[in-house]
Image (tube, rainbow, N blue to C red; front, side, top):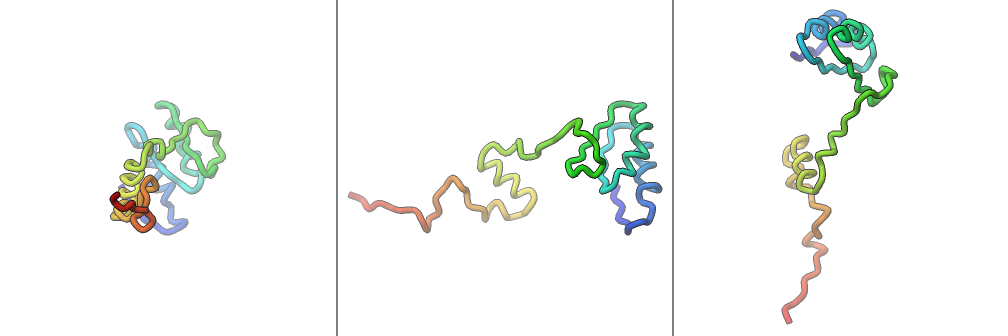
Length: 111
């Protein structure tokens, strides 16, 4: 579900909190404030572990888990593929750092 509302229009209290509390299973949510966490944590903890991923320290929570999406990138092929998922056509234009461009490549003449 996607909601687009203006600032200070009750998104958290009227949409996000009820949705998080009514969810039958795992929930992934984002916020630029900690009010959603504060309103739902204790109730959600009755049903299982609550993890907070707060890389920008908005909620001022200690890190109890982390994720690095770049661990997938182990070579230039995967890097180009990942770049292509976020910017269509970008991967085709991006030169490989492992190859020399044709403009700078020296060619030897046959002997």
